[in-house]
Image (tube, rainbow, N blue to C red; front, side, top):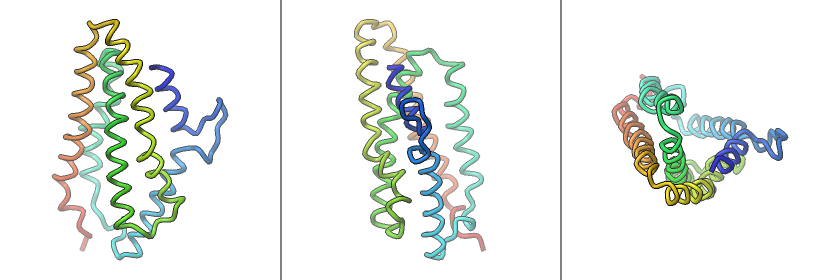
Length: 179
């Protein structure tokens, strides 16, 4: 499982066989996506700078980001394994939904700009299965860890699908263009 998680992290960082490849760096892909999103929304008369996302960003940071960052100090290894395995499955669904929206509503994005989302929409399941297989094997041979694994799964699922969405929904009215 550690190898699967390391492979995923290396992929995110753009590392291939220990060598940094900027064309594979997900930060670069994200930056292209954000830039394209800004360009398309500007052209549609909805500039990103006119959307008040400060409260949402802050709330998601507190109710999701901060909790995830504290996990390694507060949770057991089995809980972490459960949490980060289920996260890959949740991300697949999130990116797939985002990609469907992009294809119908944001057609002005170039293939390079949408690549970040498209890659993750069709790829996160690999990371999920790469981590889930070893985790399930470990649960079979060490059933005493199952409650912690389940706890980690429940925490991540709640934080990612409930806390994040709840914060977005609470602040959605602020996303209307500033007057």
